[in-house]
Image (tube, rainbow, N blue to C red; front, side):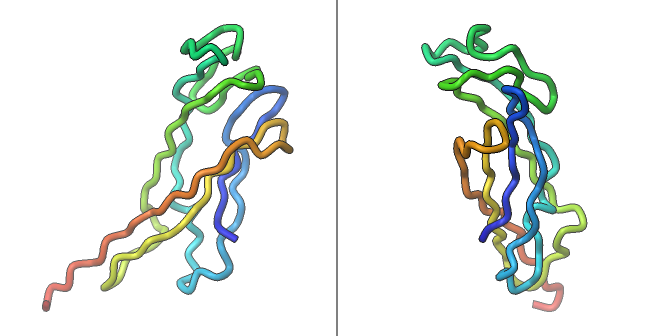
Length: 126
């Protein structure tokens, strides 16, 4: 399986939960979740399409959407950074992760596969 970030729901909240371990089939043994630095809630839209509809969610802070009702769309940004994850080598490398959005720690609401690209280290002799 692929690496997963779980955005967990807690009493109607959608927030960053825990990060699952790495993909055992990665030949380099790199856990792609290492690249994930932050998950930032941005906006929510009620079933009618109204942004920040107070009938659809109670609000958000720097990490969490609160009291989100079914049918509400949420948007968030995931920030990736290569800090101590993979030093690089002579080849460009792609690492795969899956972002999983869950509600009430049970329902799988959505998921997205992301590729994290680490460029090759420039060869000073080539």
